[in-house]
View (cartoon, helix red, strand yellow):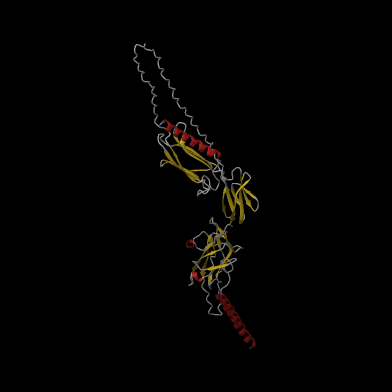
Length: 449
């Protein structure tokens, strides 16, 4: 039993030394991936699972993408754990009086199928690290049988020398060589990769963030060195490069789009007509706004026009006069407006509309009965002149204060004569000439007599 215990201890020691020697003297691969995994008895005769993974790949595109997991006797002792360049851990395997089996799965992102041996499954076993101690049976001291005393005839009895008891050499207690403690390679401190800057583009601009110490964000063309914040750029295609501590890290391209031109808001104009007398209806009168373009409508119509300066006018009907004028009023609802602002005309007949404004424009016309022609051509009759319309118009600004605008030609009120008035004048002139002729003719006749 002692010999068996010695054999187990010696085997465990030799396995540990072999694994450490293999880890220290094995030639490194081109990528320097170094996995050292062992299941052995430590100096206190306790079974331990040791995992030491060094020099694995870790870069900006694949940070902490390597992984390791382990189980002992079918039970997980290390869940799947991601690491960067290195990983180290020592785990107790359990009872030292029985053997154990461990499985360690190592995955390297740059060898996903294990073609290079960096992604690998380790199947490990170890025997019992301790056995029940047994006390050795003491070596019995041999006892020689007594020598018989011969009976001699009267021969004197000889005195025999005592037979010495043989002294057995003590059994030497074997001295066990101490189990060497494996020297684990120091776990290197992982170097964290610097976080690169980021950016986003909008119309005619780029916004960069995360340009910390050591980083440079370079844009071509123009050799622009950008810092955190927004930078205006003309529309077009660009190339960028990221540099850390003077070393080029990555590069790419981006496109800057042109900003859309906002569509100007139109001016909303409501046409309004008020008629007093006669048989004409408000919709019988066509009104006009004339500027760079012309827009027309009747009472109740609404038009949308570009901002600008316009002149308001209307098509008049016979015997209708803009006695109370007309004009344009801002921010006044058509249903609450009476075009009856009796104001004086001004020299400038134009109205200026700004984008997004709302106006009401219109006239108030009055019907005038035509004058009856005299029936007696000799009778002198006082002819009352036709009503003279006073052109007037106004524009109310946003504060409600009237702003005077004159009516355009036959626009915001006309003062000329109508066709009916012309005929009346011709009739009066003809009647006067006839009366004068009749008065002169009898005088000549009397003179001849």
